[in-house]
Amino acid sequence: MYKISHMTAADHALVTAAVADAEQHTSGEIVTIVNDLSDHYEDVRMAWASAVAFIALATYATFPDFYMSLINGLLGGWGHEYTTGEFTALLLTAVALKWIGTWFILKWIPLRLALTPKAIKLARVRRRAISLFKVGTESKTLGRTGILLYLSMKEHRAEIVADEAIASKVAPEVWGDAMVALLNHVKAGNPGAGVAAAVAQMGVVLAEHFPKGSENPNELPDRLIEL
Image 1: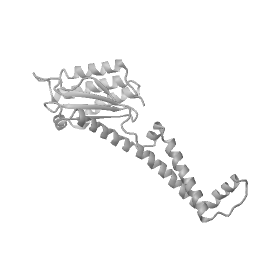
Image 2 (image 1 turned 90 degrees about the vertical axis):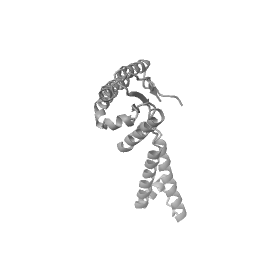
Image 3 (image 1 turned 180 degrees about the horizontal axis):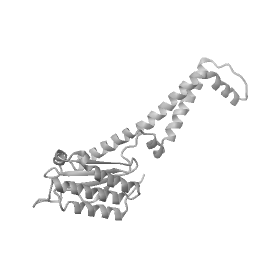
Image 4 (image 1 turned 120 degrees about the vertical axis):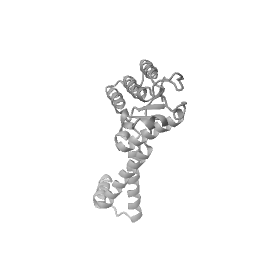
Protein backbone atom coordinates (compact mmCIF):
# COMPACT_ATOMS: atom_id res chain seq x y z
CA MET A 1 0.00 0.00 0.00
CA TYR A 2 1.18 3.53 -0.68
CA LYS A 3 -0.15 6.99 -0.16
CA ILE A 4 -1.71 8.63 -3.21
CA SER A 5 -0.80 12.30 -3.45
CA HIS A 6 -3.00 14.64 -5.45
CA MET A 7 -1.13 17.78 -4.44
CA THR A 8 2.27 19.00 -5.62
CA ALA A 9 4.76 20.88 -3.49
CA ALA A 10 3.60 24.04 -5.25
CA ASP A 11 0.00 23.25 -4.27
CA HIS A 12 1.00 22.86 -0.64
CA ALA A 13 2.85 26.17 -0.70
CA LEU A 14 -0.09 27.90 -2.42
CA VAL A 15 -2.63 26.66 0.14
CA THR A 16 -0.39 27.44 3.12
CA ALA A 17 0.08 30.98 1.85
CA ALA A 18 -3.68 31.37 1.27
CA VAL A 19 -4.48 30.26 4.83
CA ALA A 20 -1.85 32.58 6.30
CA ASP A 21 -3.17 35.49 4.25
CA ALA A 22 -6.80 34.83 5.17
CA GLU A 23 -5.97 34.61 8.86
CA GLN A 24 -4.29 38.03 8.74
CA HIS A 25 -7.77 39.56 8.78
CA THR A 26 -9.69 37.28 11.13
CA SER A 27 -9.53 35.52 14.46
CA GLY A 28 -10.86 32.45 12.69
CA GLU A 29 -8.52 29.49 12.21
CA ILE A 30 -8.75 27.63 8.89
CA VAL A 31 -7.67 24.00 8.58
CA THR A 32 -7.44 22.36 5.14
CA ILE A 33 -7.45 18.59 4.57
CA VAL A 34 -7.37 16.69 1.29
CA ASN A 35 -8.17 12.98 1.31
CA ASP A 36 -7.97 10.47 -1.55
CA LEU A 37 -11.07 8.53 -0.45
CA SER A 38 -13.42 9.00 2.50
CA ASP A 39 -14.73 5.44 2.66
CA HIS A 40 -14.06 2.12 0.90
CA TYR A 41 -17.79 1.34 0.57
CA GLU A 42 -17.36 -2.35 1.34
CA ASP A 43 -21.03 -2.54 2.33
CA VAL A 44 -22.00 -1.27 -1.12
CA ARG A 45 -19.79 -3.92 -2.69
CA MET A 46 -21.46 -6.63 -0.61
CA ALA A 47 -24.91 -5.26 -1.41
CA TRP A 48 -24.30 -5.34 -5.17
CA ALA A 49 -22.87 -8.86 -5.02
CA SER A 50 -25.89 -10.03 -3.05
CA ALA A 51 -28.31 -8.27 -5.40
CA VAL A 52 -26.74 -9.89 -8.47
CA ALA A 53 -26.82 -13.30 -6.78
CA PHE A 54 -30.48 -12.85 -5.83
CA ILE A 55 -31.43 -11.82 -9.37
CA ALA A 56 -29.56 -14.83 -10.72
CA LEU A 57 -31.35 -17.15 -8.29
CA ALA A 58 -34.74 -15.73 -9.27
CA THR A 59 -33.91 -16.08 -12.97
CA TYR A 60 -32.73 -19.68 -12.63
CA ALA A 61 -35.82 -20.58 -10.62
CA THR A 62 -38.16 -18.92 -13.15
CA PHE A 63 -36.64 -20.55 -16.25
CA PRO A 64 -35.20 -23.88 -15.04
CA ASP A 65 -35.76 -25.76 -18.31
CA PHE A 66 -33.82 -23.19 -20.32
CA TYR A 67 -30.80 -23.28 -18.03
CA MET A 68 -30.85 -27.07 -17.72
CA SER A 69 -30.79 -27.33 -21.53
CA LEU A 70 -27.73 -25.05 -21.54
CA ILE A 71 -26.02 -27.32 -19.02
CA ASN A 72 -26.87 -30.41 -21.06
CA GLY A 73 -25.49 -28.66 -24.15
CA LEU A 74 -22.22 -27.99 -22.35
CA LEU A 75 -22.09 -31.67 -21.41
CA GLY A 76 -22.28 -32.73 -25.02
CA GLY A 77 -26.02 -32.96 -25.44
CA TRP A 78 -26.47 -35.97 -23.21
CA GLY A 79 -29.65 -35.67 -21.22
CA HIS A 80 -29.59 -36.42 -17.54
CA GLU A 81 -32.36 -36.63 -14.99
CA TYR A 82 -31.11 -34.56 -12.08
CA THR A 83 -32.18 -35.43 -8.57
CA THR A 84 -33.45 -32.70 -6.28
CA GLY A 85 -30.11 -32.70 -4.48
CA GLU A 86 -28.12 -32.39 -7.72
CA PHE A 87 -30.34 -29.61 -9.02
CA THR A 88 -30.02 -27.72 -5.72
CA ALA A 89 -26.24 -28.12 -5.76
CA LEU A 90 -26.04 -26.80 -9.34
CA LEU A 91 -28.30 -23.87 -8.46
CA LEU A 92 -26.33 -22.89 -5.35
CA THR A 93 -23.02 -23.23 -7.18
CA ALA A 94 -24.20 -20.95 -9.99
CA VAL A 95 -25.49 -18.36 -7.52
CA ALA A 96 -22.28 -18.50 -5.49
CA LEU A 97 -20.21 -17.95 -8.63
CA LYS A 98 -22.33 -14.90 -9.49
CA TRP A 99 -21.78 -13.48 -6.00
CA ILE A 100 -18.04 -14.10 -6.01
CA GLY A 101 -17.62 -12.79 -9.55
CA THR A 102 -19.44 -9.55 -8.77
CA TRP A 103 -17.50 -9.14 -5.52
CA PHE A 104 -14.19 -9.45 -7.38
CA ILE A 105 -15.23 -7.11 -10.18
CA LEU A 106 -16.16 -4.47 -7.61
CA LYS A 107 -12.66 -4.55 -6.16
CA TRP A 108 -12.09 -1.86 -8.80
CA ILE A 109 -12.77 1.33 -6.85
CA PRO A 110 -13.88 3.53 -9.80
CA LEU A 111 -16.65 1.07 -10.67
CA ARG A 112 -17.62 0.68 -7.01
CA LEU A 113 -17.90 4.46 -6.68
CA ALA A 114 -19.92 4.70 -9.90
CA LEU A 115 -22.39 2.17 -8.49
CA THR A 116 -22.63 3.89 -5.12
CA PRO A 117 -25.69 6.16 -4.81
CA LYS A 118 -24.90 9.87 -4.59
CA ALA A 119 -26.66 10.20 -1.23
CA ILE A 120 -24.43 7.54 0.31
CA LYS A 121 -21.26 9.22 -0.95
CA LEU A 122 -22.42 12.58 0.37
CA ALA A 123 -23.17 11.07 3.77
CA ARG A 124 -19.83 9.24 3.99
CA VAL A 125 -17.81 12.31 3.01
CA ARG A 126 -19.73 14.40 5.53
CA ARG A 127 -19.17 11.78 8.24
CA ARG A 128 -15.45 11.66 7.53
CA ALA A 129 -15.19 15.44 7.54
CA ILE A 130 -16.96 15.68 10.90
CA SER A 131 -14.76 12.94 12.32
CA LEU A 132 -11.58 14.76 11.29
CA PHE A 133 -13.01 18.05 12.52
CA LYS A 134 -13.72 16.61 15.97
CA VAL A 135 -10.19 15.22 16.24
CA GLY A 136 -8.17 18.16 14.98
CA THR A 137 -10.24 21.35 14.96
CA GLU A 138 -13.26 21.37 17.27
CA SER A 139 -12.69 23.38 20.45
CA LYS A 140 -8.98 23.63 19.69
CA THR A 141 -9.06 27.43 19.63
CA LEU A 142 -9.68 29.80 22.52
CA GLY A 143 -12.70 31.42 20.90
CA ARG A 144 -13.94 28.22 19.23
CA THR A 145 -13.37 29.78 15.84
CA GLY A 146 -11.84 26.82 14.04
CA ILE A 147 -13.16 25.80 10.64
CA LEU A 148 -12.29 22.83 8.44
CA LEU A 149 -12.26 22.70 4.66
CA TYR A 150 -12.29 19.05 3.62
CA LEU A 151 -11.88 17.75 0.06
CA SER A 152 -12.36 14.08 -0.86
CA MET A 153 -10.87 13.56 -4.30
CA LYS A 154 -12.30 10.27 -5.56
CA GLU A 155 -15.86 11.15 -4.49
CA HIS A 156 -15.54 14.67 -5.99
CA ARG A 157 -17.08 16.04 -2.81
CA ALA A 158 -16.10 18.70 -0.30
CA GLU A 159 -17.35 19.81 3.10
CA ILE A 160 -16.93 22.82 5.36
CA VAL A 161 -17.37 22.14 9.07
CA ALA A 162 -17.26 25.04 11.51
CA ASP A 163 -16.71 25.32 15.25
CA GLU A 164 -19.43 26.44 17.64
CA ALA A 165 -18.82 30.20 17.51
CA ILE A 166 -18.73 30.30 13.71
CA ALA A 167 -21.71 27.97 13.22
CA SER A 168 -23.82 30.15 15.50
CA LYS A 169 -23.26 33.22 13.31
CA VAL A 170 -22.75 31.90 9.79
CA ALA A 171 -25.40 29.81 8.03
CA PRO A 172 -24.10 26.82 6.02
CA GLU A 173 -25.28 28.29 2.71
CA VAL A 174 -22.99 31.29 3.19
CA TRP A 175 -20.06 29.03 2.31
CA GLY A 176 -21.56 28.40 -1.14
CA ASP A 177 -19.12 30.72 -2.98
CA ALA A 178 -16.16 28.96 -1.37
CA MET A 179 -17.48 25.55 -2.40
CA VAL A 180 -18.13 26.68 -5.98
CA ALA A 181 -14.63 28.14 -6.26
CA LEU A 182 -13.13 24.93 -4.92
CA LEU A 183 -15.04 22.49 -7.10
CA ASN A 184 -14.64 24.53 -10.29
CA HIS A 185 -10.86 24.36 -9.95
CA VAL A 186 -10.91 20.69 -8.97
CA LYS A 187 -12.98 19.82 -12.06
CA ALA A 188 -10.40 21.69 -14.14
CA GLY A 189 -7.63 19.56 -12.63
CA ASN A 190 -6.25 22.22 -10.27
CA PRO A 191 -7.10 21.06 -6.73
CA GLY A 192 -4.42 23.20 -5.10
CA ALA A 193 -5.76 26.36 -6.73
CA GLY A 194 -9.26 25.28 -5.76
CA VAL A 195 -8.45 24.89 -2.08
CA ALA A 196 -6.60 28.23 -2.10
CA ALA A 197 -9.54 29.98 -3.79
CA ALA A 198 -11.98 28.48 -1.29
CA VAL A 199 -9.79 29.57 1.61
CA ALA A 200 -9.75 33.13 0.25
CA GLN A 201 -13.58 33.15 0.11
CA MET A 202 -13.79 31.69 3.61
CA GLY A 203 -11.41 34.39 4.83
CA VAL A 204 -13.73 37.11 3.54
CA VAL A 205 -16.69 35.66 5.48
CA LEU A 206 -14.65 35.10 8.63
CA ALA A 207 -13.20 38.62 8.54
CA GLU A 208 -16.73 40.04 8.44
CA HIS A 209 -17.97 38.09 11.45
CA PHE A 210 -14.72 37.53 13.35
CA PRO A 211 -12.31 40.39 12.64
CA LYS A 212 -8.75 40.01 13.84
CA GLY A 213 -8.24 41.15 17.44
CA SER A 214 -5.20 42.59 19.19
CA GLU A 215 -4.26 39.16 20.55
CA ASN A 216 -4.72 36.43 18.01
CA PRO A 217 -2.29 33.50 18.32
CA ASN A 218 -2.01 31.07 15.44
CA GLU A 219 -3.54 28.06 17.20
CA LEU A 220 -4.00 25.65 14.29
CA PRO A 221 -1.61 24.71 11.44
CA ASP A 222 -1.71 26.75 8.24
CA ARG A 223 -0.25 23.93 6.16
CA LEU A 224 -2.36 21.74 3.92
CA ILE A 225 -2.87 18.28 5.41
CA GLU A 226 -2.97 15.47 2.86
CA LEU A 227 -4.21 12.09 4.06
